[in-house]
Structures are given as C-alpha cells and as structure tokens.
Length: 165
Length: 165
DNA sequence: TTGCTCCTCACGTCACGTGAGGTGGC
DNA sequence: TTGCTCCTCACGTCACGTGAGGTGGC
Image 1 (spheres, rainbow over the protein chains, first blue to last red):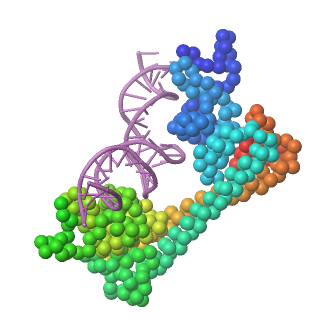
Image 2 (image 1 turned 45 degrees about the horizontal axis):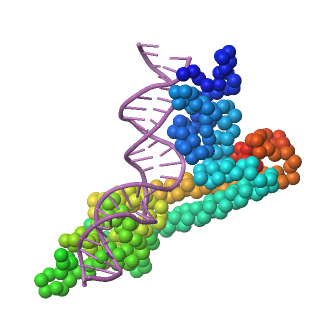
Image 3 (image 1 turned 120 degrees about the vertical axis):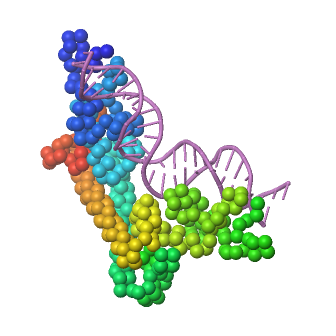
C-alpha cells in the first residue's frame, strides 16, 4: 500500500496529487471530479492500491477546458463528444468540429434568451395590470371568483392572473 | 361502479370530465395533471369508485393560471405557495404577495439573461479566435499539446480553448 | 366482449449536493 | 494510534416523459 509514482529509490516519477489537492487547484470539488470521471471526461493518472485517485498537474489543462466549455453553456455530453474526437481527423477537421459546436451553442443561447425576454415581457405586463387593480373596487373574493375579463376594461387579464389578484 | 356526479334520476349534477378530456381542454397531458395533483396544485372535483379522476370545467381556471405563471418562469413550488395563500388576508395583502412574487421573478429572469449574455459573449470571442487559427501553422498535435498561450499573439486563448483547437 | 381510457408504480433525465458507513495514508 | 483524506454507494433535486402491467367505463 504505497503511493504510486514512486520507484524503489523513493523519488516521485511525476508530480502526483490526490483528488482534494487537485480539486483545489482546479477550483472545483471532489464530487464533480468523480462525476466527470464517470462521464469519461477526466481520469486520474493512476490509482493507489487502496483506491485513491492520483492526478498529474497536466491534467489540469483538460479539466480547465471542460470548465471553460461548460461556462459557455455546453452540456457535458457535448463536451465529451468534442473531446473524444480530439486528434481524430486533420487539423482542419478538428477545427471545423469545434466551430460547429460553438455555433450550435450560440443558437441555443439565443433561443433561451428569447424565451427569457418573453417571460420578462409577460411579467412586466402582469405587473402593470396589477398596478391598476389597486384602484379597482372589484376583484375576486376569497371564494374563488376570478377577474376575467377585467372589471375595469373588460379585457382578459394578461397571463390569466384573474384568479390570483 | 357508476360515474360520479349523477343522482338517482341519472342527470349529471355538473359537467364532469375525465382526465383525458380535461387535459385536452387545457392543452396539457395526463402526466402533468397527475404531477400537479401530487404537488397539490390541482385536484379533481371527485373520483369514481374505480379511481378515475373527474374534473369540473371550472377547474380549468385554476389550471390555466398555473400554466400562465409557469410561462412566466415561476417554479411550481412558488406557484403553489402563491395559490395556497389565496383568500388569506385582505385584498391588498393578496395583491402585495403577487406583486412581490412577480418582482422576484423579474430579478431572477434578469440574472439568467445576464448569464446567457456572458455565454454569448464568450462564444463569439472563442469563435473569432478560432477563425484566426485557420491561418496558423501551429496548433496542438494529436498527442495533446495545447495552445496556451496562442502561438500567434502570445495571449491566452479565450476560455482556454487551447487544448481543443 | 371489445377497445379505449384510465389507474398506479417506477425508472430516466442533468449536474451535481449531501449524507452514510467505512477504510487509506502519512 | 490519531486524524484527516479518501473510498463507494445511494438518495435528492425539477418537471415531467415514458413505459410496464393491470383494470374501469360505456
């Protein structure tokens, strides 16, 4: 049960760190590293006979790239697919794959942003309408009457807030 | 085993529909209705002796409001909390609670939008940088060298794309 | 009786968080 | 030997989707 990376002279063959130190270096945590390993994203360079994971400093590059791509919103499966095909094909082909993935991500982000904008819009509209209710003597009673249409202007409430107001 | 809502004369006391019809009326599906019931958001007016759910047309109002609030991005637990306190307190208090929830939601949406904007920004930057790589003779070899810093300008690649390009 | 509708589990999704219960390493 | 670190399950999250296997209702 000795730590790996040591030859008989006791000199470390490389800089190996346990998962805790590695996580600290990378600004992440143990669970995430184990999860990434499960997904095939990063593996420790070796394991001790007791099962402890040992990482090389160089593995940080790979981990940092995963983190970077994740910050851009890519999901882990996509990131894995991208990294799996590293080294496959020519330099041009590899670049094309990355470009493709990033462009697809831009489209995804745009779609999400559009949804959020619509939500914001609906929220402001509802907020404005509820502002008017302040001066309205009507309104649903506790028993559950709903305001639709609005007693003030006869139009449906935005997003059917009728029953809530 | 007769359907509920019928008295001895066989005349329906109210308009009762089974879950399938109700889902169709509401533009949703069975699973969602059952899930909402589990969360305490909507309950069928009654059940047949065989366990079938029967809904009133009027229950549509409540369901539509859940759907509307969900479109605004509120999570179901929040929606439930809002609807649970309906009828509690004065008209003003109820209005204040709704206003509060909607304002909190605006803040949430804004935060999400900011994150998306940052992602979009990072994506465009990475895309631009990768564009330059096309004319670069360097680049990581299959064995795993990474481009950091960039061989062209000596600066770190955006979002650590170095190992990918 | 035949179908169509409905029922209740219960697993899967995504990226981890959070224990529980138990050992490795210096 | 004491602690600190690490190990492997395994459940929980959120809003359902998707079967499986079985019955209700007209």
